[in-house]
Length: 315
Length: 274
Image 1 (cartoon, rainbow over the protein chains, first blue to last red):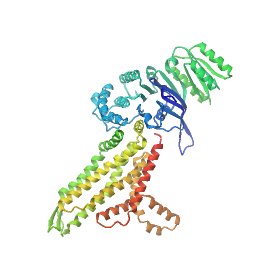
Image 2: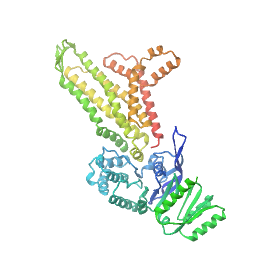
Image 3: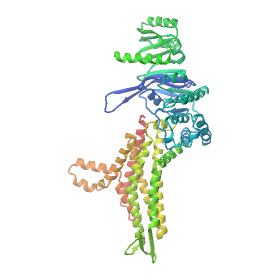
Image 4: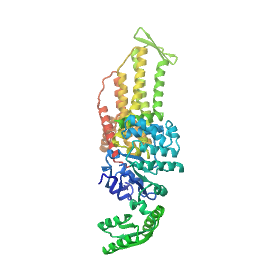
């Protein structure tokens, strides 16, 4: 585990079991991920891929079945690991009896802020999210978009080093989305790590530098967004790749990931692809497919998820 | 400390917003005002009195201390039975609210231990009811003392026993809410504990009536384990009437039940996925 990473998980697994049902659901399945400090990271995936459970595991509101996670090098199960974290949950139900300012006051106090600092910060934040005139109004009277903006403000209240945002633009109009993106960009420029959990590919593409695509609880693909979407490239999938070789190829690839024992790589050029093929053949690893890659995140996403769906159909 | 005060204060704020706070205080104030305006006592010879209640004059003189004790007994019984029922009903909603999806995840994302979140919600709910009970008991005690000159300190003990038994039931409510997320189920369980208590209190008679040793054991076990709402209420009245308390065992065993329920609730809350 490295304290240089804002988020680090190792083989993080969460299996939901019901006492009265035999079936178990592997919501998160052996996820190993590293998010460097100061990065804007997007976690993508179809509905039910395990994105929200992954975030809940980081915040210890769900207990892992196996594996571990650290936030800035601190075991995420410890309450102090959450001190530098601001969180906006998906489908939040912020206390409706509080006013906007009251919610920020509560969020600040729970995060350990001094009273003076809270008093100074509240008007600043209300101004930032465009709710200056709504600070003394109860949340029960806020629209969905306003609640979302206030939710973002409360996550930023104690000036966290890491923001975990679960569908932050859900219910926000296009102008509000643009404002939120601008705020997040400012934060990111100040060195705040932003972890965006979203199914809106355009949002992620506009803001994030790195992405991971989660599918059926596993990381189907991860890498730098610029590499994943940079012009033409090549995608290679092979079976039985030894860990040593996987690491070597990952260093050359723009993205790499595992899915059910199948190693997948994205190479920016034909030369790197050919070199990888040579190495895989030398190790007698059966090649599953080689294909030219597309250029938009949506295409990358659809291909990744589509190939997963194909595998499911083929099973 | 900041988080502790914030969580405690948040419970009080929510109670106020849900009108629980105002409902309780409105009812208590109504009772106090009832005594203040409608009870007129004319003290005769310092020891006996004639009483006018709602315009009706008592046909015979009543010893003033006994009269005050009767009023206090009425208030104590009302508080212990009806007040407790209302308090349980309102507090179950307050306990369950904190576990609402979308809210609990937000709370758990803060650098605060789970135990503290639950305990402070418990303490806040207890404080709302406790303050109200003290307000009512002190109000009635002060008015009766002022009007009659009878200042019976044992009436103040009613507040303690009522708050104590409410805390025991609130612990059961907390456990039920943590396990089920249902305020309705938690209320039903607390009411069931209240209703079953006078039946279980007849355990000596009941074990004679049961024909199977297994059933007798079960009955005795239930009596030992469950809170003794009825018997603590009887202790309440014994204290008020200046009678010696036969046994304090119902208090200790109810306290043990409450402590165990709260410990189990904490344990379940710490282990739960949200």
